[in-house]
Image (cartoon, rainbow over all chains, first blue to last red; front, side, top):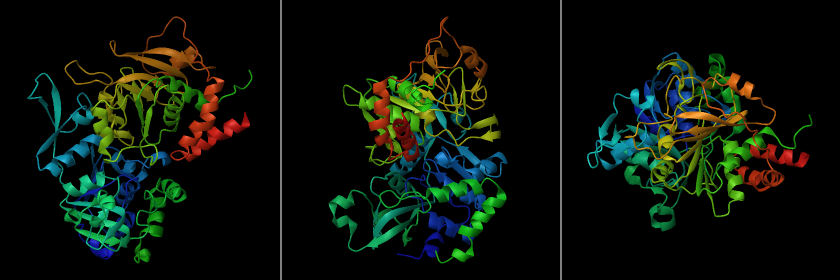
Length: 269
Length: 248
């Protein structure tokens, strides 16, 4: 176990940082700590889409680039800081599609340079991706198929219900977190609680464990996904999220939100 | 004219559910309460078991392999129907979920393409659902193609658009021709109004039928078991369905 500040110290300026979607265990306490530290130039990879976390980091000036299938606050509407930054061309936006991000991470999991994927042909998503290729299926012919280069994030960051002291992290059925961790050089995790014993000793638990083999560091952060939810633990704080969606519509409102929730006064988090 | 005994949302749920009857597995994306209700309605009256997968749900989602499983499942042909929308939809059923303007120089930014650039190719019956029926949404040509409505014959494409449902009308998509045909207009909506508010050209029969209103049994299901099933994922929407039931 490490203190949160030490954990996020592993995330340097300009890092290619993989993050999960809002429903999958987002390390929000760690994100606020990164903002307080003044991280710059992050290149975010949303696996495969993102919301509050990406909007907050963009608004706070921490982000140079985003690759994602979508960025939105869900039924609370558009992600306002993301939208403003993309329209002003302040960040480099790389539009993708959900399965392409999953597949590009799977390529890295397998240690192969690319992955083929159906769909995409005839879309502008493909047309604006000079890094993607279309080849003819070498086994059949007359069957065009897209190839995606592997993506290897420098860091994967997420929040999970619990871990043991050996660094085994229980993620349950949220297996996109496993893909992220397998593909990333370094995986950093915050958890609600640290449990006694070794999670790998219990076969029922072990099936839902990301083994310490893939985990570079764990820090305890109770309610660490707040104001987002953590499945099985707590729901999203809808009133708070609605207030964020409203405040973040303007630069001034966003600055007020940051001052309330991510300035030095909350450094104890 | 007296108030009908159903809401616009209930009409749309009933319309969408008719397109799902008899299918084996229907998947619904996040933040889609009306399609979600339609899937549960079709499930509630299905003669053989229908599986409904709601993304973002804990209890109506059997996936255990992470975010990629929906896409793998679709590519294997294990999902029969899905819903997509779009900030812009054109007459060839091209979808734009990215933005307006000359990409990447956009004047309006939408969230992004999500899985549309893939699922539209692979799921046999993709139903386009967009409540707003206006020339702003239903355009002659989308500014950005997140997912194309039709593909050349050499492109692997078992899936594609089936129909477009809005707050005013139902269009069927004719894949051979690559265009929409007006199938029905909702009660109280005129064909002229639909034509005026639709930015793309479409075929229409000489006599355009009126979308059938939901039957009493359908309304009872929507206000009972469907609302209960929806409550976990869409608590606010489910509450409006139940309130309407109590008021009627």
